[in-house]
Length: 113
Image (cartoon, rainbow, N blue to C red; front, side, top):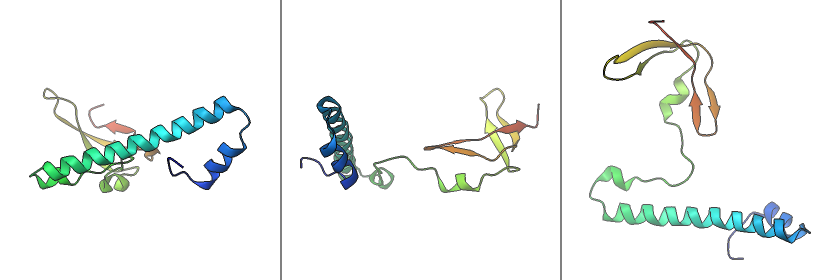
């Protein structure tokens, strides 16, 4: 009862017969929980010490895509910043964006191709 875990995981741990696998699973779960707790504590401390309102709005947990990312679809016109030499390059999204975990993969065709 050191960490709070869901019932399915608790059941899995209790029914495991391989003690090494059981201990590895418990340690992995505990590490994830402790890491999240530490991150929340640090974020709270930073927010408490900060004068800047933007720094006070710290979020802990899996990253989320910004709201505008869901508006990108095939046919959307975008501009991509290469570098100082080439600057902004206009392009068109040529496939539906693919979301993989917390990333959005976008295939584009540049106008200058």
